[in-house]
Structures are given as structure tokens and as C-alpha cells.
Length: 237
Ligand code: OAD
Image (cartoon, rainbow, N blue to C red):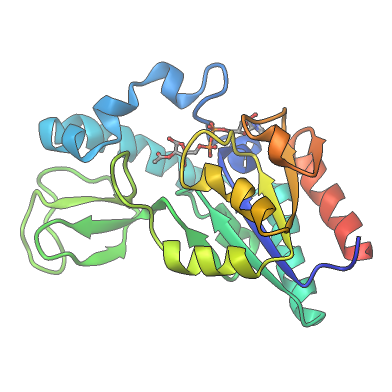
């Protein structure tokens, strides 16, 4: 393979699994224990905000307690090595955690938002947020209580940064999906788009994803092992 100049990486929950953050669709995963329609939609928040806050308060605490693993670190290393070569990495994640940033990645597109940010439905202010949220929490910007929510994307809402993600995908010469089941669009459609554009595609996952047939190549195993191995190999090419 020629040395890639513009690498597009899409990560999912599998990249953070070994940091102790649960995946969604594996056996025992978050959506096998909880109903996403009761917790992860704007309608659910409208119906039962106390329950939704409780669920995301627990998840926020889990993210704060977690630490990046070798897969996050390898991706941060890839970004700086590609930059040194005059090449680039575009890192797009479906994860709402900040483990890529804490491992040293400088630019990360969080298409499903960030759990360590809150948004006020009243005044639309977005701010860093590490504490539990409740209906009593006042918005620091407008002072009103009851309108703060995690600034993440729920089912039925538009993912974020789609314009810059789409542009980066079109310019890429290598597409790599890591730790994602390929079940949630639009991210699940990126491999087919990449292929249609003639971009080489590679999957790194614990096991073949729903989209496995679309990838030119694949490496299977835990992200903490296969991601550093793949990146070491890529940087030698
Ligand atoms: P999923 O839970 O659907 O898929 C996780 C993938 O990671 C699966 O293919 C697993 O095989 C793989 N996996 C598990 N452990 C792994 C490990 N140690 N190393 C490598 N791979 C591993 O998670 P996502 O594809 O990220 O959205 O889910 C996409 C979206 O669905 C999430 O962003 C979330 C969820 O509902 C919203 O909440 C809107």
C-alpha cells in the first residue's frame, strides 16, 4: 500500500471498551439492559427528565473515572506522526467520552456530541459540564433551572459536524473504522461512501461488524492490541 496522506478514522464504543466504558450492542451491552427509547430520545427527556438525567449522570461519572487505553494513545501518536510527514488524520468519533482528547488527540469530531458538555434548552448556551445534572440545576448563562441537558445526540436528532465530516471523508485516501458495529447511521454508511469513492477501507474490531463485507481488509481482536499493531504497520509503509 502507498503511504496514505489523508487518513479518516471513525471510532465507536469498542475503542473505549477496555477503558471500562460499556458498548451498546454487544451481549450485556447498554442497550440490552436499558431501552434506548426510554432514555436516549428528546421525547424520553420530555416525558421523564429525572430518569434520563439519572442515566446520563451515571455515564458521565463513568467517563470521568475512566482512563484512555492503548488504542486511544496509538491514535494520538498517529495524528502527530502523520503531521510530521505533512500528512493528516481526521478523527471522527461516535463516542461521547473524552478519552481521545485525554490520550493526546488534538482534533476530534464528536458526531454524537460530548457528555462532558451541557446545553441549555432555554438560552442555547453550551458549556463544559462535569457535575450531575437535575431539574434544579440552574443554567450558568441564563440562570433558569430545568433546561439543562447533556449536549449529546439522541435518537431522532441530527448528528453534529456532518459538513466537515463529509468533506474530510471525500478527501481521504484511507478509511479506518474501529470498534463500531455499523448499526447506526449516518456513520454506518461511511464505509460504503468511501468505497464508492475508491478510498481504501479497513475495519479494526473485536469481531466482524454488520458492515464487514464492505471493507477491503480487516483485523480482529481487542482494540488495545489491534489498533497499536495496525498503526505501527501503517507508519512503516
Ligand atoms: P456498538 O455497541 O453498537 O458496537 C461496538 C462494537 O465494538 C461492536 O462491533 C463490538 O464487537 C466492538 N467491540 C467490543 N469490544 C471491543 C474491543 N475491546 N475492541 C474492539 N472492538 C470491540 O457501538 P457503536 O457502533 O459505537 O449512539 O454504536 C453507535 C451508536 O449507537 C453510539 O454512538 C450510540 C449508540 O446508540 C447514541 O447514543 C446516539
